[in-house]
Image 1 (spheres, rainbow, N blue to C red):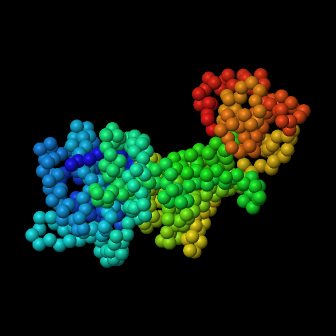
Image 2: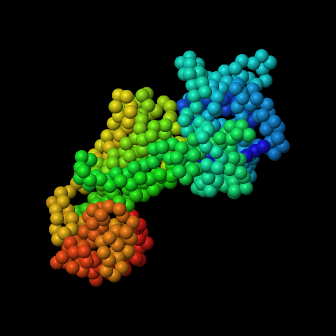
Image 3: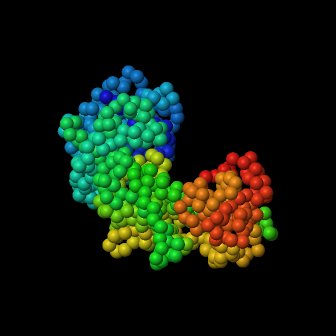
Length: 526
């Protein structure tokens, strides 16, 4: 029986969410090479999550799909499925891919989803029609299927029954621990056709189609990855599954700190933590120069670098260790700490040069879901992207640290050097001394403040309305620049520390607010 894929077919064919090394295009039905590729995906030598074979789809010399597809004739579909079943019975140990019949541009395609198997290594005969069959092991090398020989064969054999942690069964959980609402929300988010019929299925049936449920029919089990994404409280099963964001106003060695803990499904936890960091700790500086029209713009910490560091930490950490991912923020750096460190096959010196390539991934299924949700690109692109983004922002070079035992992994993102301005106190407000002959352009944060300030409001009310947790940040990035620009004034300017102090728009601020309302992009919610 054909099933529906848990991802959008157009994205799969065009390699938007699944990298090319995990897709094999076949113009027609040819059992021998297709069976060998299914075997290679099932062996999942590099823990990438298996792959897909698309039958009826041709490709060019560079491995890119050609549209419209070649397609399969209607009269051949039943015959191909029967032959496929017979061929898969030749795989040792038994392995059967998920089959989905798709129609693209009025052409029939047969899509075979072959996740990494639970009982590797797998082997298949060199020829399915040979009278005297010889079985061989196959693996993927980049975008090709090759026979595993010599050291590769020995390494594959050493992986016998070694299933990555996220693809293992969680035998302490039941089907009731999986949320069908979260599963359907994910399917809708990635544009899967399975979302339309998913509400009519049981949690077990839907979970099996998404490959987050396995085991015998009489005793189905959720896989660990299913609980991480489709349970409201995965930390109940895997303690330490959380992200801690810690702010050190006096530096990492100071006595004061503020902590915010994020728990829940992995994708939500990542987005909530990133949103909190963006609202409370990131600011852009825009410097206008008197001798040229172009302004200088930079962020204290570029968001894209933080996103990449945090998502990589969630992706590659061990969930068997009861340690959270921690984001430590001070005025001098933002650091992301996770446990354990990188695989020993990676030399730490390679990180700084942007050459970190892992031989084998720790959590192949977590990576699959994060890639479908566009939260990561995979294929060891994280470190090069962080280096590129930091350089584009004009920030110092980031640092990647671990120890000889690979107990932990720390990514340090230094603050932009021009964002480290000496602070002084003036009229009870924190101000920044600018020694360069420049003028500061009104920032997006100030524009936001002008749009939300109604009548006379206290600092606490303004902060709550903006959704900010950090008082010092709110004063420095929102309130002080607005007062300095003449857009906001204090009701008690002679008593800046008064508990009755309120803030209101000046006539100039009211004018600026009206101008901003005519430009929707200024109504930015930080």
